Image (cartoon, rainbow, N blue to C red; front, side, top):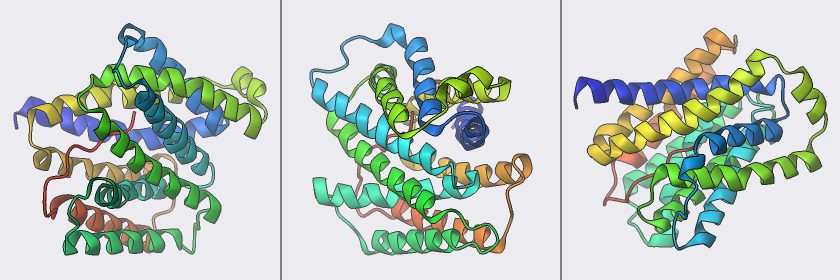
Length: 291
């Protein structure tokens, strides 16, 4: 890998890690679903030139938008109202075992003994992480984050069924469809939206712009450039640095606790995820990354 491409890969890792920090900063000023809806408005506006017919399978595109933009991100951000950024960044890695399980059920992909062991290890790590005695995450919120990881895995299955599609076209339609759904959900489930928008400062709006421009457009575009140029087994290992960096950033920037359970649970989870990803009995296709 060239130095330029390695730098691009590391930029993706850093952007995704900072995305969890930005989310927690934004949640201090906005209700979760409202903030996510605003993020997708930013994405839809910037990717408006890509709002052309994405695929003849319109229904499948709409399903991806609902599952990825609405359920995955909606649950992740809602859960993060009661979960610190570091544990959330680690818990979302459960997308990998969930994706492997769904690929086995839906596509009949082989499930080797090492993958099964990796699943058990990953979930054991999450159990340890959730049981941190000094800074125990709200159980309901933590479960919501885990369910959000499951819906990311569902979105992977749907995106695989779409076949080849311009990622910016897909992102544009996801944003356009998901934004009104999230605003509607916010109107039903949240309160104080008008006051939040009126009183939000530069930190809140900066978080929204960062998540829309940085995480959705820049990182996602670089990711698809890299996986189009290199084998996945050369790129994916670098992404496992993202939750590690997110935990470190959360400790430094957000003053989140640094405990033995967080370290142990995080390392065990990432080790289990790595086993699933790199000890596959057969190739299983590309995994989608979040917008």
